[in-house]
Length: 266
Image (cartoon, rainbow, N blue to C red; front, side, top):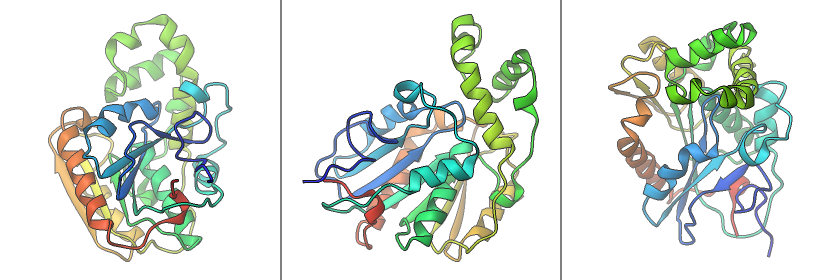
């Protein structure tokens, strides 16, 4: 029997099955924020019911992929994630979710697998403007001190870690690279998606305005819903449970639709 190279329990491949769900009827694939890793979603994967599986993407340059080089840009990262070889075995309907940088990674993956004829059953994006309104930036070109201050501002990293010199030395290059990916990302022209899109963001998030959230409707011919939570850029920390519940509901609703060969599992 073939083993799915992007959904196996071993470190090989880009996706991590954080909690086994052998009887899952649908799947949610989670794309981390800049500087984040698959383990950020471990508690999410443990919180979902027995019939839904959460897979988390592991970007190069962190955790068990620490030695791998950073991608050149979001486009090449998404291409590498979307171009997994087909495998044998049961197939599950799939929802893609991404927060912050992960939102545009998930979107670009959705574009590629849709173009290949295997669209996801839905796309949920969080804390990021619509692709056409992505904000350029120069944080990745600043000093280490300036980058740390940006992390404090967005609350992207726990403050005690930012005061730890060993952490800064080990992980700041990865975080800088992710800022580069985010700040230089530009969506290329191409067909619109034809899947439901749900947009989530915090009402005090300085990284996204209401009009930037609503503009996600322009990426799809399907329905687009916007949900607002109390909180800042990392409202997810306070609202994990309702977001997990939302993703679970989306996955269950998709379970009666056609499956996605791109993320089939043995």
